[in-house]
Amino acid sequence: MRVLNLVTNDTARFFDQQVRALAAAGVESTTVPVPGAPRYYAEETTRSVLDYARFYPRVLRESLDGYDLVHANYGLTAPHALAQPTRPVVLSLWGSDLMGEYGWLTRRLARYADAVIVMSDEMAAELDVPAHVVPHGVDFETFAPIPTAAARERLEWDLDARHVLFPYHPDRAVKDFPRAERVVESARDRLDSPLELHAVTGLPHAEMPRYMNAADCLLLTSRREGSPNSVKEALACNLPVVSTDVGDVQQRLCDVTPSFVCRSDAELVDALAAVLARPERSDGREAARDVSLERMQARLLDIYRDVL
Image 1: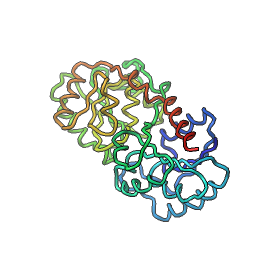
Image 2: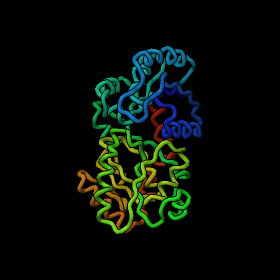
Image 3: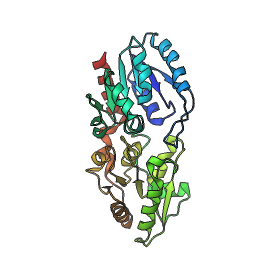
Image 4: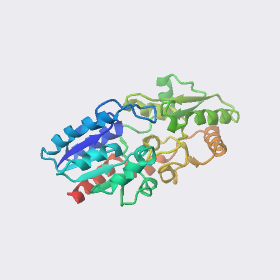
């Protein structure tokens, strides 16, 4: 099977994992990214209308080269996928493309795709066409439990302190780092031990498991999400999670102890303080089996075959 991937960010690690997982199943992929550089830490894009206009001629040329289907990854690549006249289209939505500024456009274009893939039931409810819910998968070999003390020593973190992980750039407005700071500051007053907040981003993917195993809790204060990979990766490392009620987090954490889904600052503070008062690892790894790379691979292959 030959697949032409259209994507706004070909360096996104979850997209790279998707391509590699499908390659292991015999899918030959070619990736065509939108010209210009995406802006990672802001809601708006640095790309212009001209960049997207320049994108279409290459999409058209590539689509004539014997591919079985076109997989549009992210809603802003949908117009180009649908405008090529010869191949069926699978459209994957990542979250902000449906829930953000251009959601109106994404909803309209989704009607014309041969199959639509979303990250969560919440996203599927935003569409007026059927959608397959296939969250991005987690690499269970990379994200796995290791001793907390060893991870902290490697990172030179205080062994006697409590550590909260915020796995995003503080400037990404949708992740709401100021709220995370407020929650941690309020929880600090309830603890006898020092408490440190670590905003970690831009690391090689292989380095993140060390941070997740060194931390006592992952704190997610996002205003909206699709299916946040950081939560699923934390589960694979048995790291407790305290999160706002966004995307599929409620579904991921419903059977995980200790972990909490919260709606207010007060609930976030109470939950974080409870997790940190008696730090222990969670039982999340087993709950995350449903979002392994292997499960994602199998679901995507089924969708491809149905379309063809």
